[in-house]
Length: 338
Image (tube, rainbow, N blue to C red; front, side, top):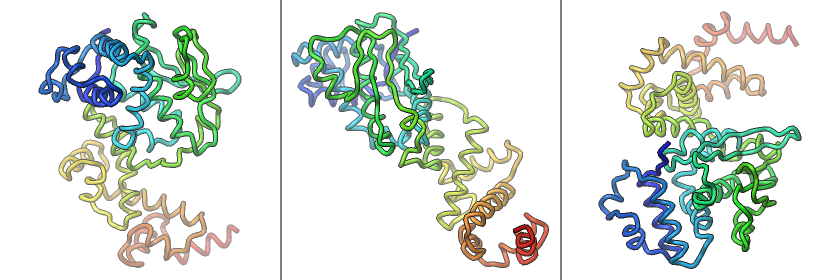
């Protein structure tokens, strides 16, 4: 398998290496690139060349841990631009799955997955495509340091971070950089490369969870991967967009299309191919929201506003479609049941 990284990811890393003391022009000479080729974000470079660049950077700066520093600083410097997908996920386990799906847009060097140990701990395992662990250690360092920074930020709300980090290469003579970045128990020479989390850290709701923004981002990233958006992804995306539009008090096909990151004609075609039109979907979601908010103790007037109806009669007509009776008749049935 040929392992590669995108020029877009390479460009960001070279910029950080420059701040760490390895000049960009020196790195480009090492890689046999010029600035023009570097800007061709659609192109990719072999991982072997990137490894040689990282080794040269370590020699040039006399810093054997420069790959660790690079991975850490990449995520710190780019989290706002590249980490939004992860911050919008529901749980850390979801983050790992999303990371596995989209990481190849940056660097294609392995896969990640979540496993649960018999003791109940969650493990984020990085399974590299490469077998020569020592040769590719700089790649392991870049990727794991980036993971650590991301997961530390996302788990702070649970009160528990990474419990332990297992690295497959032998213990270095100086582990100060590892301790500084991983801030967890460190185990070297492990059979696999992984991080351990508590159940609370892995399954707790991330404080920045945003399903609407998550679906918008996945649509964009799927396009970048050249993937056809799956039917379930579309269903999740349109429901999240409709709910978001209702919450904002503006609901129309054009508004929903914009929230989904597509134009109106594209949304119309997707709706046609799905076999369900916009109005039936909107009606179903409004009914679902009504039930949710009524059970939460909200009044009919409050719920009507949440459903973005222009007037009460419009909601009353919808209500009769949903339940086959008027709101006043429905209230009587509810009082009998209590």
